[in-house]
Length: 249
Image (cartoon, rainbow, N blue to C red; front, side):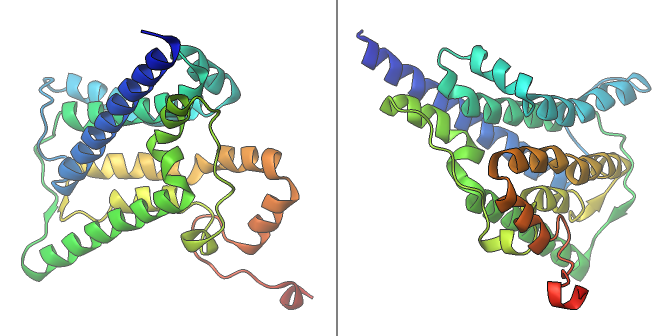
């Protein structure tokens, strides 16, 4: 096997694992969130289940945030056979983290509220709309980057990854962080509410509000005044209207 064939084979292998992990992780999240984490495959006896669930709950935001730091990106570059796979590895790890949480959460068995009748269908529509919003935000921010395709596809072609430009169109005209907002929306719109779902929703929504601050700092370093002007025009997380310079005067 020559070098080009080996490079292509490795790239395709990492791509297959990445996208397979992505499908499994997101699929498990969509399914188990719909039922408010009221059933899963976790079977840790209580009260030890509380600690196990806490570890599962925190591992995603902690590791996700660390890998987005400079040191984290350096680590990702060293983890694979080619540094171009960094974005692929990042997406793969995030997907595996989601899969672990939603597959092995130990349910409390308590149902706080179960939508019925018209309310059930309203909540189903809101849940579907939340996922639609999230997927649209992912597409508009650069699907190749967000899905992990950017790295393995660049390696397969023997080129360096070409990162997408700062997104300013579509949902990004309304808020600066639609991916995080959409992710949080999926945590609150299911037809079944449980203590499990509420704990997850509160903790991860907090992360969705605070976590993007590091991303914004990184964007400021990369894009400078262009991103600062974007911050002035577009609200952070909620679509509150901004005052124009004329109004301020």
